[in-house]
Length: 287
Image (cartoon, rainbow, N blue to C red; front, side):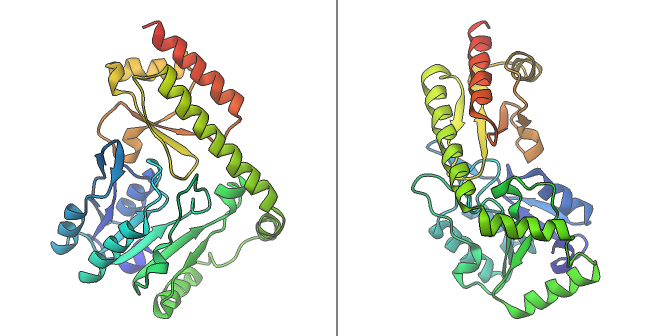
């Protein structure tokens, strides 16, 4: 869709730190990343709407590539936040493509709102695939939705021309099985993951006060800031990898310039996660 709806040299707006593949896809298509960095206010990530509007007003971005729920910071954007974004995009006639692959993985009292529910005719939702909900990362299929028939036909034509409009038999039947038979499994997975989030939050608050955790509203990722440890980047990496045995993803992958930020994927056995945090606690206390 980046290639279909923008031209060589056009800007595509992303809200950093954000899923690292966004930048790769934009730049490999010969487009330019227009960064709209998220702000931290009262320990909470928010959208910088002043900068967002300036980027669109100045023509720096011909497309907005949104991530909702947001990977890696874990925000589930509210309807009000999305409406503000859509109002600005409409003002400057900019298409919004929303990656909503984690839409079903939402915690506590938070509510997911799809971009296509707001009545903007130039909005497209990449609804996702069974990969995140059911652990089917090895199958290659996904879903795209838009209310606008002209956009739909344009996307469909492009997909057909690339011969990616069909899956294989295993992919098809795995997807059918997941959505027809997988509700009980998914609900158990969601509850398990939410309980893991709560455990980590409580452990960090009580035993690791020098680590800042941005408690996710959705996704199976957690975003951490280790700045208060005041360690050199290489020392921090060694502490996490060699001492705590944690395979965290560096924040730099997501466009974060502060080397103290890391992302953790918590789609794992809770006992393994608890053991990792126990090792981390021991390692920090021995500094």
